[in-house]
Length: 295
Image (cartoon, rainbow, N blue to C red; front, side):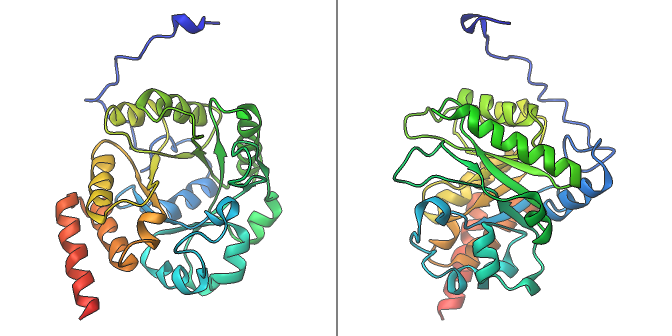
């Protein structure tokens, strides 16, 4: 086993040799069985290989944060304008009409709050309930370098093992504690660990320096989190840069439901992710839609 002081930064990232997707449109998914591929094809559009996910699972550890006070009023009307919903089973059952027919990435970790250590989680949803809800995928945090790193990895491994048994993919979410670095080396480590233990796709953060190395070094798709609320122009530019550097889409929450016009923001994000619009072009679209709805 290598000593810690013998770990060297990678140098050969193969930028000119993209991952082979000739046998299935999604990176790293060619050898999955039919059911797993079918669910991944619900989450990622086969024509683009990308996705726009709307995350509103924040309440499981933050409570009724701004924009999520009434999910039935703020989020349910947005369901038609996103590719995928990411939420808890409680929010799904109580507020989202099943007739919207959108694939769901089900938040399956629980057991913490903003008042305690964030990495001390458990698996809060059994596989039979995920199946009962028709989940397209399951999700849990992995906290690399945190106090309960081992426990969080074990949670994700449990989801991967049970999900694989029933053809349901798992999205590992790279949780970041308040004292952790937010740089390419950290997220490169976290996303690679998530893929190596078997996660079918990963949610992580965009960083200004080295993000392309993160996506190249992860053999499965990465979708980026929005993180804290940014000005709409900046959030769209971040989405553009992430996709341009290899991300397979976005999974944004606060940058959508705390926007001045959430529906317009989802439309602009879809233009970036699926149509290749630049951040500036998408922001112009957002402003036009915002003015039109205000008129």
